[in-house]
Length: 151
Image (tube, rainbow, N blue to C red; front, side, top):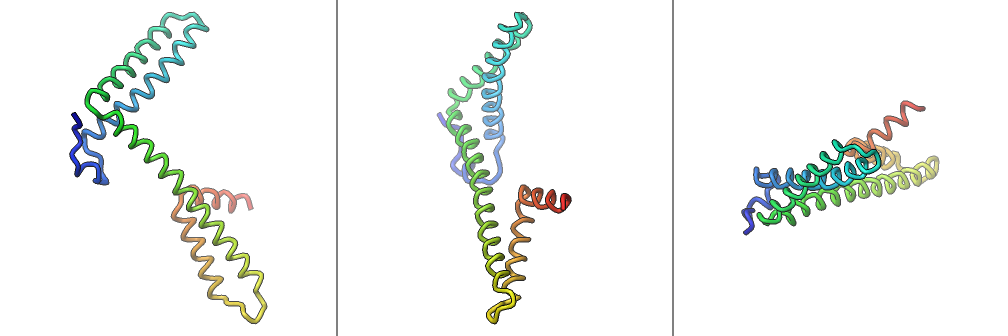
């Protein structure tokens, strides 16, 4: 019994049902992981309060898992997180590859400086492309700003 409407899956915005499912998925991940860690620490330190907290965290994680499974939202919530993680990694790799290509092109243009076939406009266009790419990716922007401060 899936509660997602077909038009909700293609929407760039999260519906309240999707947000609830994702929050329950996070509770599942945090509850199960935190519960195991707390129970392990409780065994080592022999503290009953940590064991109780670990048991409650495991119970919350298990309850959210069961709620997601009963409502048919477990797979869709997991897919949402997996898709976001994959898209984030691909964007970084793509920008890095583009930056490397532009830097190689810039280097090749600089090596032709002073020769008859040198095109200063192509050099300037490549510099502008590098600047635009760095400005579009916060990770690259932080890297270049850190390099500018160090120099």
